[in-house]
Image 1 (tube, rainbow, N blue to C red):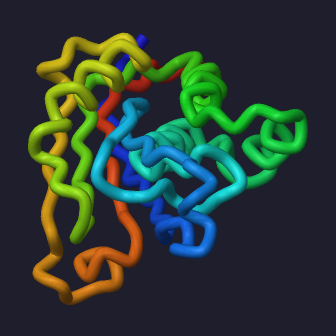
Image 2: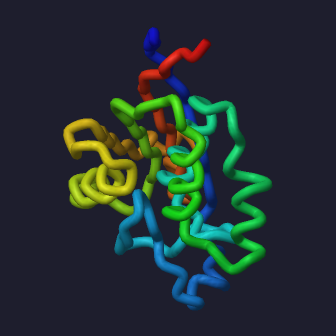
Image 3: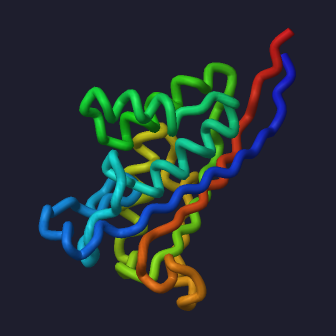
Length: 167
């Protein structure tokens, strides 16, 4: 059966938990790991923008929505872990094999360079890719956007894959 290359783009963004709520202790999770140096992100889930961008990219590959209706159902049932959302998204890839993921994170805070290797390892293990097939870059955005000014975090994910064409 013929195989074609496909690519999809996912994006997500969340603002930080407001200062008045920061004392709740919601951790900042990015790429499936806890990051120190900033409050958690606001959202009804764990608000992991990296994994949400990945879910959206996978949805772009499979044309099956995960965030939104399915993630809302999971949240209502008490599941706020974005790794579960990624696993749900991966289940939609029956005839698609992930090859490479590239993430671009925009955040004025916290400093992320020291966490990139751990994020790569966590994401690679989650999607069953070698860490060399998961690329992550981070930028401060030079204060040009709300994310660069430290009001929240934005992430883009480009997913490359092979799709087996069936009759």
